[in-house]
Amino acid sequence: MSALASAAGPGFPYAQCHTCRLVVAIPPVAAHDAHAALGCPRCGSDVHRRKPDSLSRTWAFLIAAILCYLPANLYPIMSVTSLGRTQADTILSGVVFLFSHGMWPLAFVVFVASVVVPVLKIVALVGLLASVQRRSRWDPRRRSLVYRVVEAIGRWSMVDVYVVTILAALVHMGKVAAVEAEAGAFFFGAVVVLTLFAAESFDPRLIWDVIEERDEQR
Amino acid sequence: MRWVGCQVCDGVVEEPEVPDGGSAVCGRCGALLFRRRRRTVEITFALMVAAAILFAVANAYPFLAFEMQGQVTHTTLGSGVQALWEQGSRAVAGLVLFTTILSPASEILLLLYVLAPLHFGAPAPGAVVAMRWVSRLKPWSMMEVFLIGILVAVVKLADMAEIVPGVALWAFAVLIPILAGAAAFLDTELVWRRLGEPA
Ligand SMILES: [Zn+2]
Ligand SMILES: [Zn+2]
Image 1 (cartoon, each protein chain N blue to C red):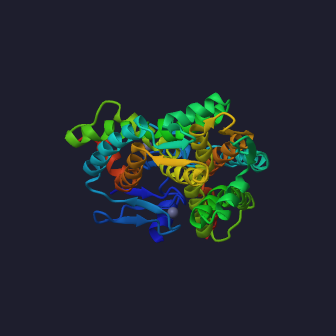
Image 2: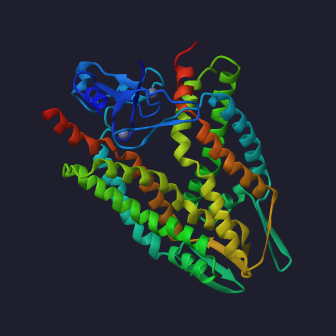
Image 3: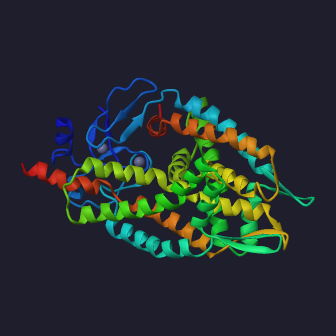
C-alpha cells in the first residue's frame, strides 16, 4: 500500500500503455492533462493516462445497446421450416426449447449466455458509469471486480448468433426443411458488439481517481 | 528497477519477483498483473504451430453433416457465413466471419510471425506492429464460443434429422484447448521486452 501511495503521488507522474502495459514516465508539462497523448517508447501506441472521452463514449455505446435490446428479444432470430410448417424462434423460445427437451446443462449455458449476460452487462456498466459520475466512494475494489467480470463474460453471448449461422448452413432444403436468419439475429449481434465496445471504452481507473484525491488531501 | 502497472486501478508497484509459472495480483484491486512464463516464446510458438495446422483442417473440412430424407448437406466454417450472406443477413455474416475466421487466423499467423524469429534469434521486421495487432484482435476471436454454438445446434437438430460429426469437429475440439493453453502461456511482458529491448 505504501509503495502504491508514493508511486501514485505527485513525485512520479506516469501513464500506462494500453497495448503493451509499459509504465511510461510522463513529462511534467503533460502531467496535468489526463488525456494528453504520448507515444509509447516500446510499442509505439498512443499512451493516455486515462482513456479519452471514456464516459461519453461508454454511454453512447450503452444507449445504442439498450435501444437494440428490445428488438433483439422481440423479433425472431430465425425461422425454422420443417415439413411445410414454419415456426419463428426468439432468443427466449430457444432457451425454452432446450429446457423442454431435458438438456439442462446446455439450456443453462445458453440461458446464461443469451439472457443473463447481456442484461447483467448493461446493468453493471450503467451502475459503474453512474457511480463514477456521482463520485461515489463505495467499495472501489468490488466495483473493479464487477468491471473485470463484465469484461470477461461478454463474448459468450455470441453463442446464439453462431447457432443461427450453423443451422442456416446445414438446413436449406426448401419446403422440406430450412432455417433462415431473421431480424432478431441482427439486433442481438448488435447488442453483443455494442456492449463489447462499451466495456472496452470504460476506464476502470476512473473508479479509483476519487479515492486517490482523498488520499492526497490527507 | 522495473515498474508494473495495474490496468484496472492504475496502481503502480515495483515488479515483484515471481517464480516461473506463478502470477502476480494487484494488491489494491485484486486484478491479475501478469503471469510469469519464462519459456513463453518456445511453448507458445510450439502451440501456435499446432494451432495453425488444426485451424487449417477445421476450415478445409466439414464439421457437421446433416442427413434428411436421403439428402445430405455438409457445413464448413465458411459455408455458414455464405448461407447468412445469401439470405441477406450480411452484417451478421460479416460478424461471424470476423470473429470465427479472420480474427483467429490473423492472431495465429501474427503470433507465428512474432515468435518464430524470436525463438531463433532476433525479432522480425515489423514484429512490434504485428504484436500490437495481436493484442488488439484478441478479444474478437471467439472460437471457444463457436464450439458451444455447434453443441447447441446439434441438440436442436437431433429430432429433425441425423447429424454426423466431420473431421473439422475433431480438429476444433483439439484446437480450443490448444488456444486456451497458448493464451495461458503467453507472457506478453517478456515478449514485449524482447521486441523492444534488442539484446
Ligand atoms: Zn506500449
Ligand atoms: Zn489494481
